[in-house]
Image 1 (cartoon, helix red, strand yellow):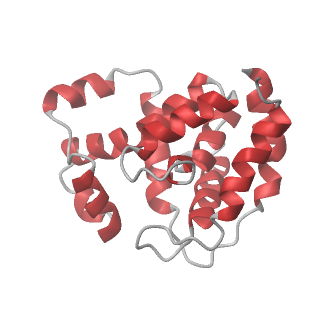
Image 2: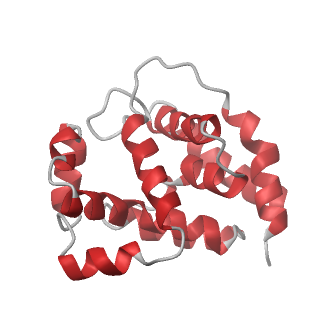
Length: 179
């Protein structure tokens, strides 16, 4: 039985709210703070609802499974099961590849990553090959994938004021109801 849009939002909110005290992999923010900061950055740049939703939910794969690898794929699949549109799932699925792409084509990019992000890059396969980089560049939504990656890296500011999680309910409902 498929979930209603309201039930799907409740599920993701429960996961995100439960991460309120959960550290974010060696960073000075919690998982919830990271998600809210990424979504806020997306909104501040005028991103559309789908992209803001992906920014908010990009790391849900860390929360919906105990698997420590391929969180981007686990998160994308989880969001698909909840009824989120493929456009959201694809952005979530690609945020690790965007980091791998950027470190391949901009050698100085890796040096700007936090220590925790550099370590996760190593675990995620390191920079892309030239062939993979060329393929990634031609995928639909390439620019949004890079923007999501930038927000992911920036969303690590301790003590930053953000809108509350509940403020994203109408946006997520719009996205779910458009699917």
